Length: 170
Image 1 (cartoon, rainbow, N blue to C red):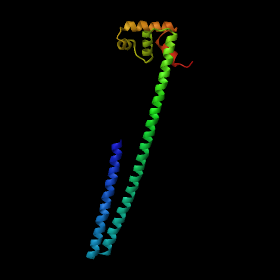
Image 2 (image 1 turned 90 degrees about the vertical axis):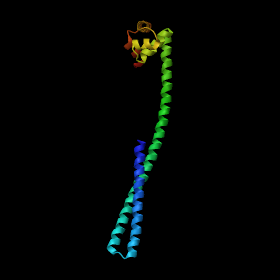
Image 3 (image 1 turned 45 degrees about the horizontal axis):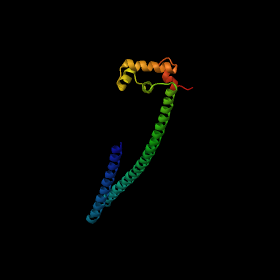
Image 4 (image 1 turned 120 degrees about the vertical axis):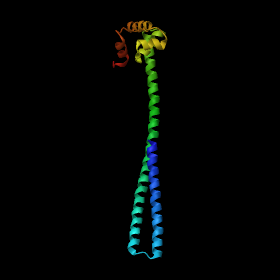
């Protein structure tokens, strides 16, 4: 995106330089025409062209200034957004940590073993029993048994009720 913006600004600058050179060329041409005694009509035509070129330069300079100001404003907004994102990311990390602590405390209240707690966290993260077994380097049957133990100790009927216990409003 920034490449597009910088290309646009560079094209504006190049256009301004082009029209400034046209104005300079036409001024020298008018001077030469005056020395050669060209008709007043021809000199007026070239003067009008110079005025048109100067008007175009004015429009291009305004666009360049406006675009540069807008780019500067967008850069400021981007910095502000990045700072806000960093702040929110920090706040979310804190919230996740606090929530993890609350979940861990609930697991202790249910008297889950260390292995059952690990399986419980992985269940809450949405992993399947097969994925949990793979992550923990155990058999799927072991993961299934630990999940059943968790549900029994918590007094819940299954995975959905287990997840709901932590995520539903109470």
